[in-house]
Structure formats: C-alpha cells, structure tokens
Image (cartoon, rainbow, N blue to C red; front, side):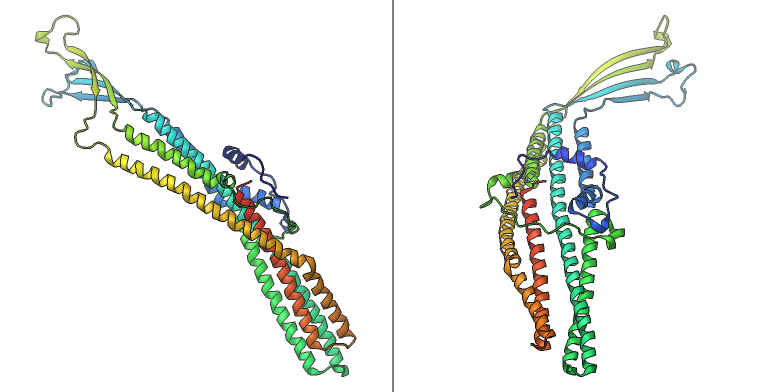
Length: 431
C-alpha cells in the first residue's frame, strides 16, 4: 500500500544531497534498475543542473542584498594656475588646493532588512523550485523507463511471433512439396510471416526511440543502445485516498514555491514604500591650500589646512516613487494569484492522477485475471488442433493474431498502470 511519507524533506537537504557526487556511474546499463536510473538522473540530468544553478544564483543575490553601502573616497586638486605652474617642493608646498573627502550613505526605512527578507524568500522559492524540478524529472524518468520496458516486451512478443510464423512457413512449404497442404494455405501463412517480420522491425524501432528518451534523462546518450530495463512491472497496490484533500496540495513543492514568492513580493512592496524615507549621505573633507606668504608668519606660513563636515538629503520635488510602489503592488497581487493558479493546477493533476490510477488498476486486473490466460489457452488449443488436422490454417492464423494482440494490450495495460502510479506519487510531491 502506498502512503505518503510524513512531513517533507527540507529543500536545502535535497540541495545538499544533489550536490554530493553520486555513486553508481559504473552501473551496468544492460540491466538498469529504476533506482539506478534515478541515481544517474540526479547526477547527470540537465534540468536538475539548471535548477541547482538557479539556487546558487539566488543564494548569491541574498549575499548582495545584505551588503551595506561602501564609503566613497574622493581626491581632488583645484586652483591650478597655468601661468604660475605648480611651484617647487613636495606636494604640500605646491600652489594648488588639495582636497580629500570621505562620504558614507546611511540607509533609512529598514531598506537593507527588507532587501534581505525579499532575497531570502526568493532563495527559498528557488530551493522549492529545485525540489519541484526533481519531482517532475522523476516522473519523466519513470515514464521513460516504463516506456522502455513496454518497448522491450513488445519487441519480444513480435520476435517470438515472427519466429513462430517462420517455423510454420518452413513446415508448410515441406507439406506443400509432399502434397499435404494447398498452395493457397501456404500463401496465407507467408503473408502473415512477412507481416510479423514487419511488426518485429517496427517494434525494434520503437525500442530504439524509448532508449534514446531514457538516455537523455540520465545523461547517457552515447550508450543509449545498451539500455535495458531490468525491473519488474509494479504490482497493483491499494491507494489510501478517497478524494483529493487540501493537505495533499499544500505540501507540493510548486505550491510552496508560489507561497514563498508571495512573501518575497510582500517584502518588495514594503521596500518600495520605504523609498519615500530619505536616505542620508554624511561626508568629511580635509582641504590643504597655499597661503600668500605676505599675510602669513611663522612655520608653515606658505600653506593652510581646513576641515569640513557635510550632510546630503534628497529633495522629493518632482518624483515620489509612485511607479516603483505601483509596480510592487501589482507584483504582490500577481504573486497571490499565482498561488491560487498553482493550487488549481495541482488539484487538477491530483484528481486526474487518482482517476487514471483507479481506471488503470481495473484494466490491468482484467488482463492479469482471466483474459490473458484464456487467450493463451485458446491459442495452444488452436496449435494442437491444426497439428492434428482438426482446423484449417485460417483458424490458426486468427488464433495467433488474437493472442499477439492481447499480449500487446496486456503489456500496454501494465505500462499504463505503472505510469499512472508514478503520476499519482509525483502529484503528491513526495520524494
């Protein structure tokens, strides 16, 4: 019985797990299990790698958001007389004004704290995005894995059928030479033999496509031809859910990411409003300037020094940050609507997955119950009857076609159920 695991793995734990070099690169692709495929996917999948880079970028933005403004150093020379020149001696004796100034911006209105809160919420949303990408890629991997297993089963059925028709054709041609069978019957067998050979080639082409699809997800395109799914089909399990409930929706990582973005938009809205709180720039300046020696006495009479303190405030005379505030309000409303949209999509996915899972289980039970067994029994009886001359070749060919069609349909039912189960588990958002 499938039951969701209590609680939820923290996104940062998932990030740490995915960042560790994973073992399993030496696993045999010729007998690949689903667990081994997931290990390879977590290590090599390109969509997961892109999601990890997004988390790293969000973490770097958090560091930038928490930084305080750096002071500004200014150096300047003024009162340069091109006719008199700079004068002789060291720098302090030059006939120019020298200024050294340091300015520091002081942010007010909790701007740094709001920037940091916004960045942290976005970082948390990116971590949830990574978890959701892992969920989606796991679902895609399971779908590709079961498609490969279905292609393998169909290819095996087609090859067995083609081999059976080949042996039957050889025996029929010998009986034709002995005069025990009509030429028309041999022609009918030959037509079905050629058709089964074409079906076998088509099944091999489908197998190749399934190998390429799975190979992309695990980063093994160069070895796609070696891929073979080794796991059994999953057994039918009872799902302990009568209907979709709110708890199933609220723990999905895509819903959690949308909620984190609402928090980020709320902090960004407060940050936009804080722009109306004036920041202050404070500065200190030291000036060194020449002094006319006719007015100065004593040592250092040729130069003078002075100090100054400054403060700067913006004047909101033409613009009061109306655009930034309106944009932040719009973004906040859009983030709230995104939560409801994501929840609605999640609910639809879960309800559809639950319905598909139940329908697929019912269909598979019918095949595994009596249908496939009865078809095989009927085909064996037809083979025995034809060998003993009790039925004609047309009845034999019809029995073989029916058996092959039911075998292919049964494999398709197993694939349908396996993918429906994977979609239900992925819809719950459970790792």
